[in-house]
Image (tube, rainbow, N blue to C red; front, side, top):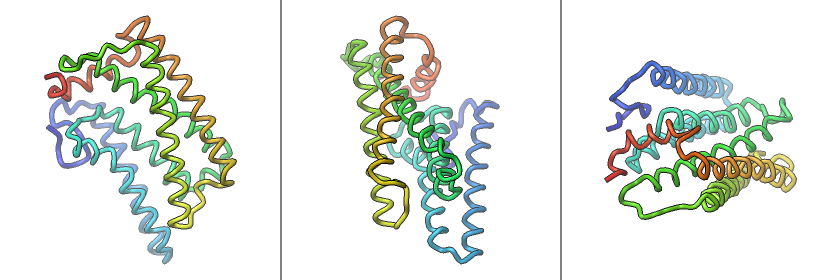
Length: 224
């Protein structure tokens, strides 16, 4: 059972989990300071954006509560760090303009990470007794690739919506930025799709097995 705070398991409060909780709190504090600074400068539009970003970084925690699924702290923190890096550091901290590689790095890594989440999903489905699935390595590779690319498409729609509704500039140079983001995400998705294929075919219990086992241990209802 999960607590009502920052998504930590009440059981097994290990030092590593405490460290990750500390990182989550530190991220929220930096954004809170940014919010106070924007209010002090009477930049209310910026303050509103920081508040929305704070809510967005909490979405993985709320989503796990809503779905009644406990994400491993590592996976939860990874999702929060990505949102923090792309929205707060990228947009508010202007990292996209300061570092030309920032946008490419995030979108390449997002393809890899979404592929990882997709792989965990099919891995768990294959292990769940109530599931009759017997997935083949090519299907696993196709699913992880498609999931990552679809996620990239949804993110680009999100960026377009933020630009249109709030007058931001998340898409930078428009079509060129969108296509560049999709291409590097495609590279990351292809890379993990290939890795997922090899691991599922050669050795199902390697690389991410500890993370998958932890997910299943913390969600015993999925095994019934």
